[in-house]
Amino acid sequence: MQRRQFVSLAPGAVVAAAAAPAFLRNAFAQEAGITGKTLTIGCSAALTGPLAGLGQDVKLGAESALAHINSRGGINGRTLQFNIVDDAYVPQRTTDNIKQILSQGNTFALLSCVGTPNNTAILPLIEEAGVPYVAPITGASSLRKGARNVFHVRASYTDEVRRLVQRLAGMGLKSIGVVYLDNGYGREMLEDATRSLAEQSLKPSVQAALATDGANLSQVLAQVAEARTAAVLLATAGTVSVELVRGLKKNAPGVLLAGVSVTLPSDSLKKLGDVGSGIAITMVVPDPNRAKSQVVRDYQSAMRANGKQDFTQGSLEAYVNMRVLAEGLERAGSDPTRAKLRSALAGIRNWDLGGFVVDYSGQAPYVGSRYVDLGVLGGSGRFLG
Image (cartoon, rainbow, N blue to C red; front, side, top):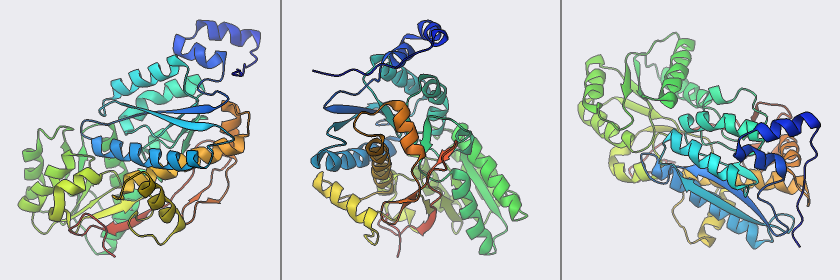
């Protein structure tokens, strides 16, 4: 017989619960998404649209980790289930998805929703509902302000951009421009770039806002060409980056291009082919194609067991993220509650997955890793040795 867990509420909390929206009242009523045999994890991600490649990588990496965990008996006798729904990188769809997930009362925790504007839209809902949320796929520093239910894994975009600027400035380059996506993600990246350049006593040589659908690409390319900049930071993401890179390579030959971890997801790299050669990209997890560390070997093994041989940054990140959530669930014990999971995650200290360390400080904002490496793409879309 399924055992249900009820949370005791003080009288004032009962009134608040009754007045809350339906999707929050379910969270007050019981621990959702858990039975004696299963535990369900939810996610909203771009499985279609401009960031489809990244969303598909999240799905593949998380499911590969989950399949491996379940093959070994799950967590404390429960099989993990992963429910991922498409939002096409549209913030309103992400909000609608999360509202529906919470209203259905069948999700215990959330994992790796994709996108800065998307996560900006849903974090208030998550905080109000009290649902543990592990590893948003965003490095936006604006979203790391003390949320008690959110446990970031990846390093911030601020860390990534600073690393790129330091490398470019260290090469003696004084003329560094920025092309940024014209949304919340891109504008915050521009701020990060401007601050990092100021640390090197530099200013952006050009600032060009690229529409999320690439509609103004020709104008952006003209701006960059007119500026005659030596290097361009690509504060873009997904499929729009492909035509941008092609255009820059054609219209501004010789310009150095550098992007962050989400600039060119795996599908974008495949579309670029040899055109992507020479682009510098930051990595927030180790190189997924080099089995030098245990975490990469474990990831590759899990992917192969899931019938996949194509190793990518995005799927490795999602694999790591699922491992972090599973570790929290393991530490939460055989009778987990959302409160226990939050405490268990906050208590993770110097946990080494084998070349990738996660360490939460015990107090919000929870950021598990500051790992940032820098690679240069070869013609195959893989990082050069």
